[in-house]
Length: 104
Image (cartoon, rainbow, N blue to C red):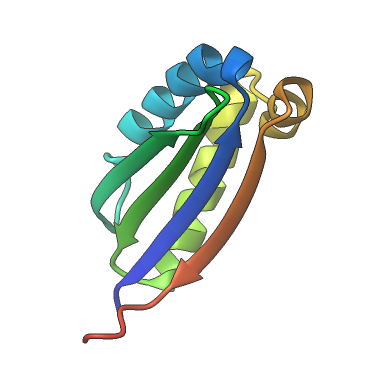
């Protein structure tokens, strides 16, 4: 059953450029993974210039998501990237969840 992996990020104004660079890298990387169907991203800027981003990635199954997470973690180790460190340093918050399509 298809699954949607949805993230909502709050990105302080001063962190937007670095966040967008990292997000573009990640989106390009996951598009080549088995089980990936499609992704989309939505953004808005609040009254203080902070960025709110919602990303939605559709996967073939929960198993595909689990394998993708493992592959992404391996890639992060390979390139020396620590997302928790970046989020902490830049004051980025994330709300994350996996959802199934209510209409199907």
